[in-house]
Image (tube, rainbow, N blue to C red):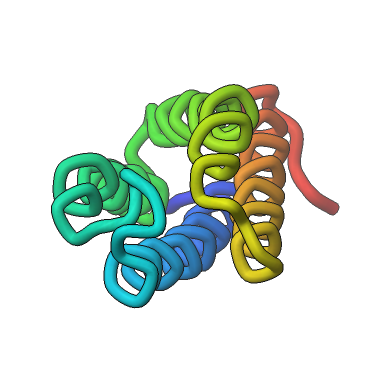
Length: 130
C-alpha cells in the first residue's frame, strides 16, 4: 500500500530527529563519557539503543504504508514527547549540566516529534494538507 503524504513527511521528520539524537547521544557517550551516569558507551547500549531500533521500525512502517502505521507512529511519537517533557528534561538534562549544544538538540528533537504528532493526528483524523 502507498503511504500518504503525511505518513511520508512524518517518516522523514523522524529520520532527521533520530539522526540528530543518535549523533548527539554518541557524542555524549564518548566525548562526554563520565559527565553523568547517562553518559557512557554502556548507558548508550542499555538505555538508548532500543529507542533507535523502535524508531527505525516505526519509520519503516510509515514509509511502507502499513494500514495501522499512522496510529503506531502517533502513539510512539506522543509517548516520546511525554517522555522528553516529563522525564528527560527534568531528570537527565539536569544531571548532565547542559550546555548550549544539549539544549539545542533537545529543543530540535522534541520540536520535530511535536510536528510528527500533529501530522499523524491529521492523518488519523482523515484530514490532509492542501
